[in-house]
Length: 403
View 1 (cartoon, rainbow, N blue to C red):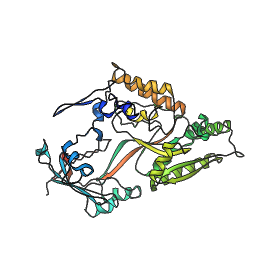
View 2 (view 1 turned 30 degrees about the vertical axis):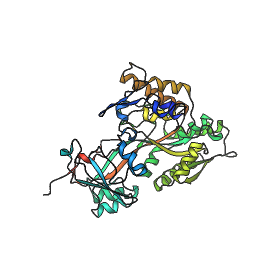
View 3 (view 1 turned 30 degrees about the horizontal axis):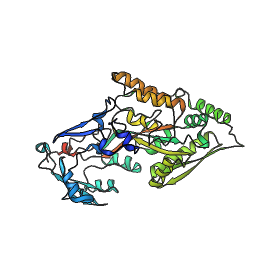
């Protein structure tokens, strides 16, 4: 809500104002008014987020914490909640009260808990999978030609240095690791077809542009030579190796990628000696938010289709700024993208300038823009993989007539 510039949101989140001062007001039964403190051009795109969904007040007041249970939950969407069995499945039935119900073709949708998706697909238990394990992608392409679907998400993965840690205060060290990182190998290990990244904003994000670091045209050998030079200037050598720890989450894919990265660095400059620390998701998040780490293997997915959804995490006061990056010029530039009267083209130029500033500061080490891969049965009509936010719209799907 703070990034949406809703009046009072920042003050409420900081505990300086009461929730009833939020700039949101129901004018009548069907009209909701938002008061913004700045002309946010992507605000309509932000309305797909859950905090804007309507909630049936009488149901919440009647059932309390059980208001989301089947039989209690009141839906304004195309489907109503029929069953919810934790760690098993969720069943949704077509909502006869939905305003556009005549166009909803599939009468019932069942969402299964994750796990063994590929096996279930092979057994005809599911029509659409959420993903495919990386070690089964090539098998799936051979077994189900034309059914493997790919889409570049609004997600970027990177190495996140803690700029307040002793190891990464020196920008020469951060630049050296940026130069040493072979993104082609990292994406090959994942085997999804991820796109190599040199900036934070994904290439398919609307309203952005491309920004490449000055060193990108250098050949691999020149990058390695420059990286070693910078590390020696920073005081590291065979006698004084550069030792630091990288934390990452419990994931087989993450383990493969971060291990490959560790090997790349050690092979190119032997006195770069990272150690790896695997953490469960909650512990991983706690360490990052508390600043109790040197470097993390992390990622960020935007909630809406605008570069601000990515770049805002580097603003000094952003709660997701685990990099501890603080640059008043960057903050000023990002704030200027919301000035009244600027064109979409000028806003895009300012976003590109913000990317360039992060690159000059080596605030992070971009690795790749994530590609989503899933399986879709050929008789599913209306399925689209063009939405980079991966919002499923089952109401638009239908089954092809049986031959």
